[in-house]
Image (cartoon, rainbow, N blue to C red):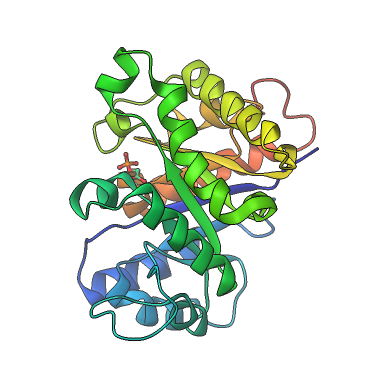
Length: 264
Ligand code: PGA
């Protein structure tokens, strides 16, 4: 079963309107044609509409959001609904990023509701799961991820197969400390197994890695059999670096890439 690779850039809360527009245009310009993977950029919410304009008239670079409301419509001040995002041309939506779990106190239940809303609105949710350094040191990684996955699985049932999962070890986000390819592969395989145990067609589900992915480490991470792409923060804000990672994903998806996924 070959799963189409996905590289998503999370621009977080950075950059002016002009800078966001310029970065989108730069990524678009540098992206090679006919990539065998999906490429997504997730600008800050207030700049999504402006970036949508930059991306108009092409289908290669897709638009993503960094969050979505847990409710469909109504008196939820400050929230942005899935339907509103979809209307702007958004296709993917990050849900349950650890920064939101930490700073906005998003619970597993809220993450599950948001995932459901995203699907209902026709968005593909990228559901983030990950353990802290303390949890990893205590040997709790599988348990923590299972718990986070359970909430989403309970809400979605068989629709769990429609999401993208992002394994984002909290200790690797924005720290320059990446999970080794072997460490990440082990967790991705365990997550796939956990999904299979829930009766989901796990071999179809894309599981991407996030946490200090950069042009130097991307090829080795993306060559792992259960790593289906990347959710990229810091390196996504440098067009050349982001496109390098996209190219590494493209190479790893090509027939004959070999066990290491590298052609060069
Ligand atoms: P990072 O962020 O690549 O800067 O570690 C990843 C993320 O937060 O999704």
